[in-house]
Length: 306
Image 1 (spheres, rainbow, N blue to C red):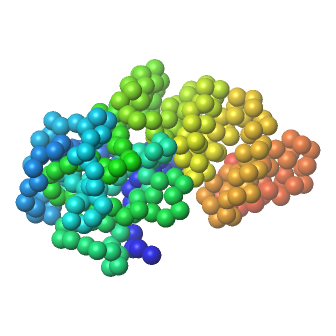
Image 2: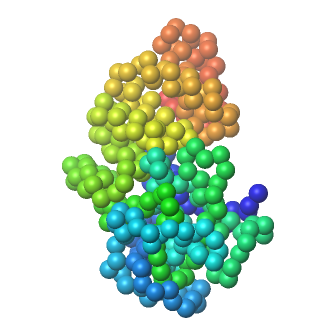
Image 3: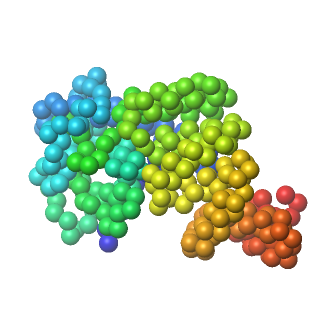
């Protein structure tokens, strides 16, 4: 088992931004806006600089879907002697947070420092797991050289231009300009491979804008892209309830409660939702018992007086 040194990928990309989880994304956005991600665009590898410095790579190169579709990306990351390369120190988590798996899900990644893995000076090892993968693949990367920024075979990267439009969409939505937010996310989608980050964000905006029926389709797509993420299924269930689709909503709540371990952070909310359904069915004693349990598990919506 490896020692986790740094987190990236879908966990960062989803948990940090989405208002559904009640977590802020301001700090991550500030770091992202200040970082010229993947700026190297195929220039020659340079000598390794000081650890805290930034490689002087051209800032005008933009990674497109076409630029990483050719043979230049084949084999990168497979060996410590042939690592992935990008041009900014400590950019690894942000880089890996943009990786799109074949089905559209974002890759889950952990930087590892396991002594059992082969190593090379200045090279990091990363465990990368796509939705449905039983075991992670090991990729190697060097964050302090300027070279080929493309991902290994089988994965794609959300272009920086698309990610910037996503950020603008989030900021516009938080400022109350839903029209601009939807326009920017549509622009981002046009620039990027289909992926759960942009898909889920559009569903979130539609749901919170009082358009749950439209949101259902986007949440369904996000679930298909990453069926391993239970929060997507909860988002879908909420939208189904708001759209008046009670049967699939009930089924989703029961299914999630049956499958998630008791300590999972989504369980208290699911207990509260189930208690509401039990009360609706006239099972007041069962409903009260489950509401009490949800309240004890810190879900205040089910506490007395709420």
